[in-house]
Structure formats: C-alpha cells, structure tokens
Amino acid sequence: MMEHRKRMSSTAAASLFAAACPATGPQLSQAEPPPAASAAAPQPGSFVLTVFLRHDETKTVDQINEHLTQTGWYDKFPPDGVEIVAWYEMMGIGQVVILRVPAEKLRDTNRVIAQTAWGGYRTEFYPTYDPKPVWDATPRHRP
Image (cartoon, rainbow, N blue to C red):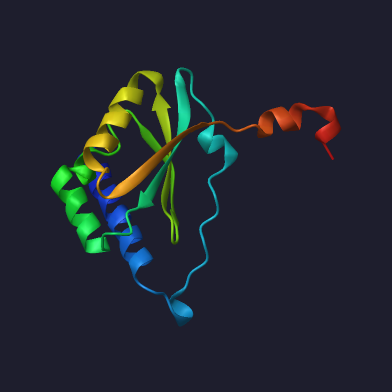
C-alpha cells in the first residue's frame, strides 16, 4: 500500500506542478481519455464518490503542497480499502477525484479529507452513479 501512496503522491505533486506552470509549444500532450464506464461500476456494498478539491487561490502551489505534507495527505489519502477510479486536474478550479468507496469506509474517507486536505483545498462531495446501463437497456434509446 505504501508504494501506491508514493505513486499517488507523485501524481498529485505532478498535477499541482502542471497546474502552476504554463505549458507552451510542443510540450502539450493530448488529454487522457476518461476511464471506461465499467471502471466505475459499483461493487456490492460500495458506491462511487466524486470529490472536488477546489484550489485555495489565496495560497501558492508551494504553500498548498507544504500544507498537504504537514497534514499527512500523501500518506493517508485514500484510506485503505478505498479505490481511486480517476483523478483529473480542472485547470483554474482544482482537482476532481473519483473514488470507489465501500459503505463502511465513508467516515474514514471524510475524516482523512477533513484532517489533511482542508486548508489547502475547499471540498465538495457528490455520490455518483453511471446511468448509461439503464439508458442502453431502454429500447427507445438504442440506435
């Protein structure tokens, strides 16, 4: 698990760095495609939680990173048993993290974010689901 957290921490740091630095010329790369719909398929006893980590624009990226390091964000997020389905940077807004959360881990997830991310980010939480299977199963919607 520690290896996963180190990799996640590098990814988060890279996202923050990329958001802070203007990209120019040929260094721009194409955006990654969204995960397949099946990647967010709910597991029995779990749900998908979309978390907005809105940047605190009163702080520099270095100040946000320092806060996250001091509070243990890189070591504690996500809590054990919670899966990161996708993580996107929304330029000018912040980050969007899509998690698969076992119901019994909801409190742990909220607590880790409250104890580590608050002060660096403003947070919003949205339980989400994929309506596409229902859409596809409805005959009038099929091509």
